[in-house]
View 1 (cartoon, rainbow, N blue to C red):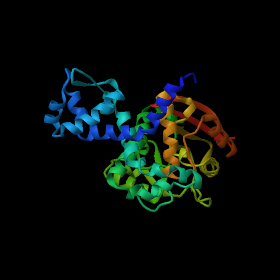
View 2: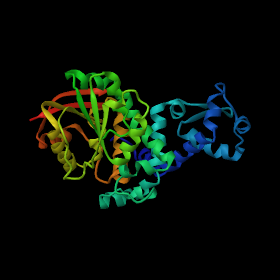
View 3: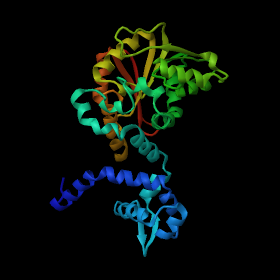
View 4: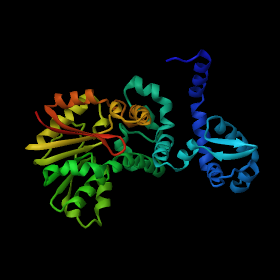
Amino acid sequence: MDISALDAKYEAQKIAFAPVVFQAVRAALNLGILEAISKKRTGIDNEGIAEKTGISIYGIEVLLELLENVNVVESENGQYKITKIGFFLLRDTLTKVNFNFTNDVCYQGLHDLDLSIKNCKPEGLKVFGEWDTVYEALSQLPKDVQKSWFDFDHYYSDTSFAEALPVVFSDNPKMIYDVGGNTGKFTTQCIEYTDDVNVTMVDLPGQLGMAKENFKSHPNSDRVHYYEMNLLDQNSKFEGQTDVVWMSQFLDCFSKPEIVSILARVKTALKPDGSIYIMETFCDRQKYPASEFSLLCTSLYFTSIANGNSRMYNLDPFIECVELAGLKVVEQFDEIGVSHSILKCQLA
């Protein structure tokens, strides 16, 4: 890295004060300050912002002086305007989803990241209550935290489903196991994609309870079935056989040995010519630097909040897990949705 000592020291200060910048942006968003600036394209001064928001001149000054320094806003002759960075913070869905997830789900718990790494446990989860993993806690988290978690989870998966469905249905499956089906988003897509498929959702009781509520009024709910299972239980077994097993953003929730164990048990549910489709966001398969950066940060959410031992994986180590479980990758599909890849796996 070719950088002067002076520039390196400045970059170090950005890291040292990064939480302050984050909270300054959050405050400016919540107080309506950035919104007020964005609506005045020709520029607006502190007095105009105060009139629009009811915030004191002092509060506006201390926030905007910092936010101008980090290029969220810009000013000329005392008139503030939104920059492109500020626009994305205000209007871009991906940025807002990531921002709210960081603030509501991760921010407090990350204070104990060092303990989480040391103990291989999600020590940050205790800010919400006493659970072993976040997945057990989901149905009981505070509503704002729950909303930010699901918004984050669904944004990345939902934008991929339309492209994933033709891949999954290429062999015309009649039965699909949606493993880690959560609230039923993919299952809904499947039963609406064709009238010929039944889907069994496999997940923890809390998640399946939420899914059942979601399917109560769906006209095709008779083709949705439920199977309660804790995949971390080594004695858990699948019943019956299926054409397809689908796992979306699921296996990154586990350590490598756990992934191997889960896949070894999942494959017993496959018909001899069946396929397992794994959709994941692999760090080293990203087209844009922003995507890779986001995934690397998300890994530390898994460390501090989710379960203490999983992460966003690179492709090759993940394929090693697939092969150790007695499976082989027969096809790979990249650039699915925002940042996903799909691995089609079959019995080795």
